[in-house]
Image (cartoon, rainbow, N blue to C red; front, side, top):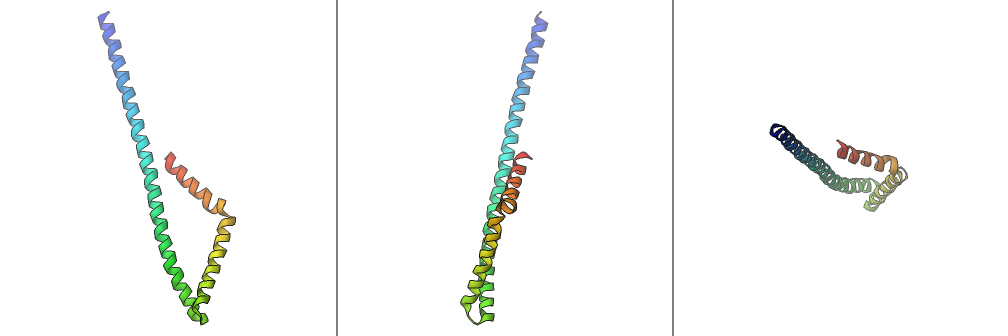
Amino acid sequence: MENENTKIEELFYKFKDYGETTLTLLKLKAINKILKFSSTIIVSIFSMILLFLILICASIGFSLLIGQWLGHTYWGFFIMALVYIITWLFLFLGKKKILNDPIKNKLIKELLD
């Protein structure tokens, strides 16, 4: 009888160890997903900031170049503003297909992988 109790106790301790190990594994997987998701967000933000700075420098350069071709600097800035308004309209009208869906899909993929 005592041998049977020992086997049951041993089985109980193994089951307890299995549960603790499974819980630890789930915690580590959750931490891994959170870190992966966070790093994706941080890299995306830094990439957007860098792209924004590049866009500003290129815009000023093109504005000055177009203004020089047309004889007045301000015309270059007006033309570049018009280009940005047209781009904004294009993005605004197609924002779900062009911006929202790809961003959502990327974030969901990062969370589920």
